[in-house]
Length: 239
Image 1 (cartoon, rainbow, N blue to C red):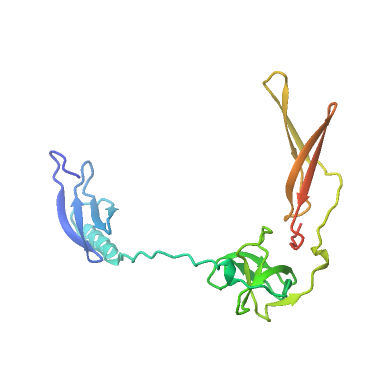
Image 2: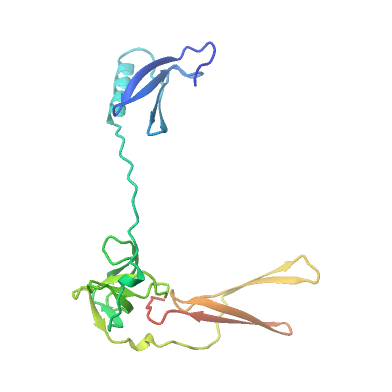
């Protein structure tokens, strides 16, 4: 790689964690640098060190320091993490329990086990709607944070969760009112006839609400914007 005419590139051999490596000194255009190159598991590793300087105690100490660094390198075995299997629908059985209440903050996981990833939480005093249970009764399947019936589970531990009655606010909520526009920006587009691009900004009532649909009615020069917001009735979020 460094075979340039007129350049004396000194080569030596060295090992890094038992793997043979090539050591190169006097690289082209540089003043006595050291580079160690090796191939391990079909990957090329290259370590570059600063100039070693003239012969003397400082250079000897620096070379010893470099060697200590190389001797400390270790190659770890590659570990391929296999994702945990999600439970089949047949693995979940029906249950008479419709809701559970968390006695403390508990994790909602992507499968019936503590090794599955955390997808949400059920906070102390909050209820979650149950859609099934594992055959041994160790885990509840509950409505996911996005409101879907997916692979979301909460542990069935009497010290953490207990069956609960249907919460009073579990019924669908519906209300209408006027929204407050906090900011309006209008841009005139270069077109004929003239077109206007307007951006209306405001705030939703809480962090769990989202805009489900929008509509615009025009009366003369007045635009009426209608928005429908929604949120899962069993969610409780701070404003």
